[in-house]
Length: 337
Image (cartoon, rainbow, N blue to C red; front, top):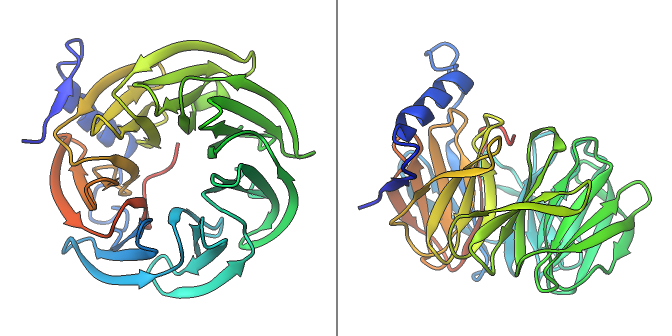
C-alpha cells in the first residue's frame, strides 16, 4: 500500500540507502549503538497542545495544553531544553525533551512562527509569519535579548544560515521572495524573487546552494545565493514544503504537502532520487532516529504522525494526534547535516 517510487535510473535505491546507513551510521553493535529515543513530542497547531508519544508502544500517552498555535520547536544549544513557539500566544514554552515536563515560559516573544539558532549559537531568530516581522535576538541558551525587529515582506517563513553564522536567509511566503540578513549588523543585505509561496530552506554542504521548497508549485528551487541567481528547479510534487537531511551530508528529504509524498534529493547531483508515496494527507515536518533507520513525519491534514522505515522507504505505522500536527521532536536524533 505504501511504496517508494524510484526514478528509472535508480533501480538499486533501497540497496543504496542501506549502504548509506552502514557507511554513515556504523555504530550498530550492542556496545556502540546509539541510545534509542523514547518520547516523541508533536505540536498540535490547531489545538494549542502537545502530544507526547511512547515511541516503542507508538501511542499517545499524554496531551498537554501549551498555548495558541504551537507550530515549530527548537532544542537549546546545550540540548537540555526544548523551545516551543506559540505563534498566536506570543510566547515560547520551555519543556524537558526527555520526559515532556513543562519547565517555564519566555513571555513577549511576538508571533514566533519559525524559530532557530545560528550555528555559533549567538543569535536566535523568530519569524513573525502573521505580523510580517523578523525578530533577531542575542542568545545565551534560552536567555534571549531582542536586538532588532525587521520588516521584510509578507509572511516570513523558514530560516537557514551560512555555516559561519554571518548571514541568515528568510523565505517570504506571500511576497514570493528570499531575503538575506547580515546578523552582525541586523541589516537586510538583499532580496530576490522566488517561485510562488517559498517555505522550507536548506543549505547544501559547503554553503554552496540554497534549496527552497516552493510550496505554491511542485519543485525545489536551487539558488546560487552568492550570485543571487537560480541554478535549476528540482521537480518533486505539489506543495513542496520542508526539508530534513538524512545526516550523511549527501541526502535530504522534502515533504510535498499537497501531493502527500516525500521526495529524496541528492545534494551533490541536485537531482531527485525518488518519492515515498501512498502517505496520509499533508506530510510536513520530519525527524530521524539516531541510527538513521526510521523517520517520523507529521501529517497536517490527516491529524496523524507516521513512522517510515528508511531502508525500505515504507510507512509502517500511523498514530492519531491532535488537529494540524506540525513540529515533531525527539532526542537523541540523527545529525542535521
